[in-house]
Image (cartoon, one colour):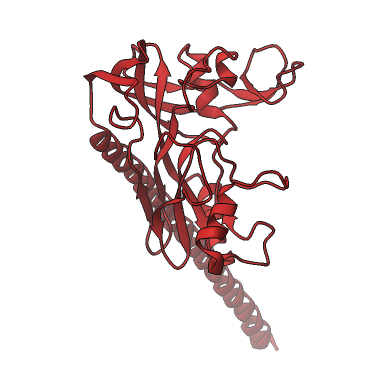
Length: 309
């Protein structure tokens, strides 16, 4: 990831197999577009780099398993066949996928770990229909519950202003969720022109990066972790001053928590299935016992009638 704009050739690949490619999406580039003037898209980059992998039966040639905003960079999973896309879709649908994003946010976030729980809806206000908003905002339509886990990694300065480097884990998947949640607590993402009310237009990009992706596919899960693009060596305007925890250990702890939660969920499902099987067997045994008793009664009646005759 560089500070240079995207080009047709600037497609980074984080993972590749027979079923999936995970690309390192550049900032300020669309995933796909039907507009003839949109020359630089991830879809166009894939066609340029991997023309033999394009599927003519799909509109764009590639099956994107999820979405990233135009301004967001990072891990983007692409399925290379219909069966693989279906497997990934089920994981996203069941909310078993773990994603984590790196961000630089404005100001110093005091609470080091927190869960952001603002319901988010579509903004219907004039001039803001391209935006989302939190429940209670004027013009907020159809707000839905949303959760984001925020963990502070570092404090520092960006272009002389105080900022905080954070790791964001979305527990739900609402449009612009991370951007809206950060703005709602008074710490909009650095370079987010839209959710800073147009005030933050100096940085060359919005500082939000999809760093980590875990899809629990069977038999082998897909696990991808990219580089940290927010380093002084890449952008000298970012000056870290105080580190609270490392990115690696934070992501490892996040994944371990998620895997433990998944293990508990699977164990609960197995226990429910076991109890249901016991109830089913119990019902069957009761039906069998009742049938035997009914047959015995009918046989006794028949014997009694036969004895009288």
